[in-house]
Image 1 (cartoon, helix red, strand yellow):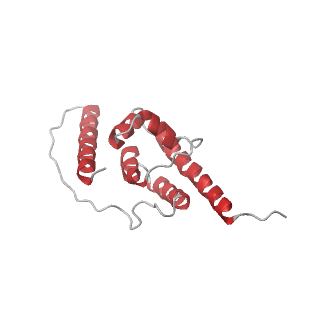
Image 2: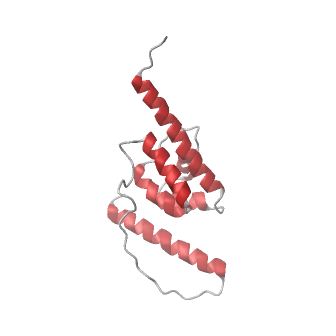
Image 3: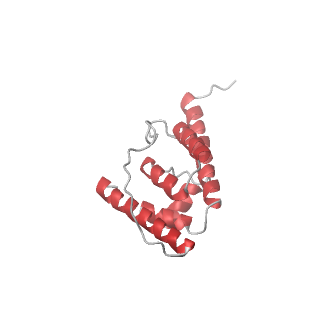
Length: 143
């Protein structure tokens, strides 16, 4: 009987967990409107090929922990999707689990905007403002 190396076994578990969280992200993106991948690339300051690499289970490129919260926000993860993703991410990268204490500390700012009398234009304006604020915050945080 061959003796199993503990490090090899752990590495295999990590690989399976990476594949699992990438599949979850891939499924989430498939159920979101077109343009979500582009918005995600813009928000992370990366090109679209990076998004393809982090969402394709065939690639071993891990998702950097610093991008997780932005991914959740841009892709609008449901609570169950987020929990499954974080569980798999934690198994894949036990020393890089994002925000182990829960939600990030945030404060709220309420803006009063004109109603553009068009639901699509209102949504576009809302998304543009959210993405702009996220990019500005990342600049201040040094990301």
